[in-house]
Each structure stands twice: as C-alpha cells, then as structure tokens.
Length: 178
Image (cartoon, rainbow, N blue to C red):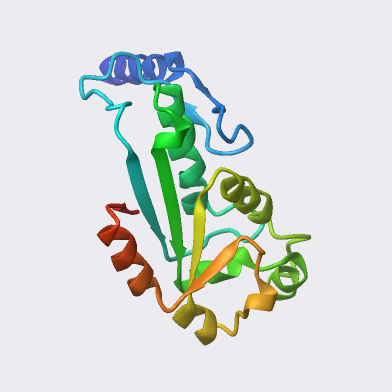
C-alpha cells in the first residue's frame, strides 16, 4: 500500500512539474500562469471577455493581494491562449478590508507598520495601464476612513460595491468571486 501511495505521489508530481509555469506578455511582473496543453474545454479567443472581480478581503500586508493579482493572471493567460488583449475588459471592485490595498504608501505604512510600502501599488498601476478599472466601494471607504486623498490616483470611487457590481453586470461584465 505504501508503494502504491508513493507511486501515485510521484506520478502526480511529474504531471504537475511537466506543465510550463511563467509570466505572461500583458503584465509580465504579475499573474504567472500554467500552460494547459490541449484542454478539452476550448477557450473562445475570438469573443470579448468582460470580467468584474469582487475583491472583499486582504491577506498578508507585506505581499500583493492575490485577489487583485487575479486580474493580471486573467489578462496573461487569455493572451497566451490566443485572445486579443483588446477583447479583454476587466474591472476590480474593492470593498471590505481590501480598501486598504489601494492606499498611497504613507497611509499604508501608517496602517501596516511592518510594510515599508504598499506592495499593491505597482500592480494597480500596471493593471490601470492595461485599461483595468479599479473601483472602490464608497461605503467601505467611508467606514474605514479612506478618502480620495489617501488612495492611488488610479482608483475610482463608487457609491457602493453593490452599485458598481450591478452596473457592471448590466454592461455584460461577468462576475467572478473567489
């Protein structure tokens, strides 16, 4: 039984290691992806793909928020699969504790003294440079005393996350929630 377990573990590790993992072309610094050879579910690379990510939490303040990085991964993996980046439209709606992830450095380090700077700002700038909308919930921001003067220049305030999510879905963005 032990040998069977070891054999299965080695086979799974071999399969996982054989897949290519690396940066994409759209935002090479963020959003590494795996290559999936010959997927049975084909990716429609000709259609417009419009995604809104619902980002409601944060993790380690010394690292980029992996939920925000999902936007870079989406752009990179679809471009690698053959989609025209012009057909990829992405919006991030941040609320809850994720509102702190868009703070300018001086306010971020005040909130998180263990960080020398906000690790999310270069990612946010890169995403905005590729047309990604960064939308902040005005209700969460007000609750956490996050003002327009405290956040990245690439952030737009919405009345609420609910408002932004509904309006974007009315514009045919598809909601992704992790």
